[in-house]
Image (cartoon, rainbow, N blue to C red):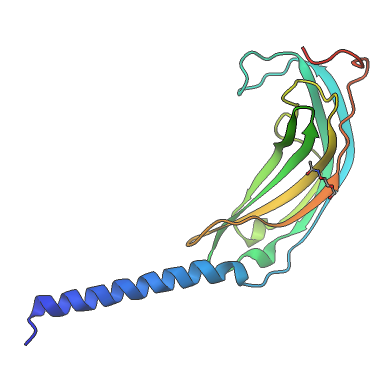
Length: 184
Ligand SMILES: *[C@@H]1O[C@H](CO)[C@@H](O)[C@H](O)[C@H]1NC(C)=O
């Protein structure tokens, strides 16, 4: 009949298949677990200034128009934590159309929410964490801009997916006295 190794091999392969099926089921069903997060984003003001900023991603630190946003965030993401949630990645993007570039997305703020205790966000008169400037170094011709809050649950097992975003219109004015002079 069967020897010990054959039995072990059969049991192991059965266990592996079972595990794989479970893993697939968990990854597929996790996004379907109901949750009822609330979130709102309010823009209080946008101030555009021209100048040079210390930018770790751009050592040339050219003179450009920078927008400073002041915003409020209210969110209760507690219900998004389930047994397969490692953390939530919350971030705000500015999306806009600009001459020559149809799609532009700049991340202006982010936060890692590690547990239920951190899941209630209440930010007042918050300012962007990351510099907001256009690729062309000026906001001339920028249109259809939106400010969007994204919530990205990171599961222990399975794929990341973007969820429950709230979006508000944003206008990016030119800096005072900069009319007519395109970015340099
Ligand atoms: C901003 O939102 C409006 C309304 O939902 C939409 O028409 C526009 O295309 C959005 N802009 C961008 C750049 O996605």
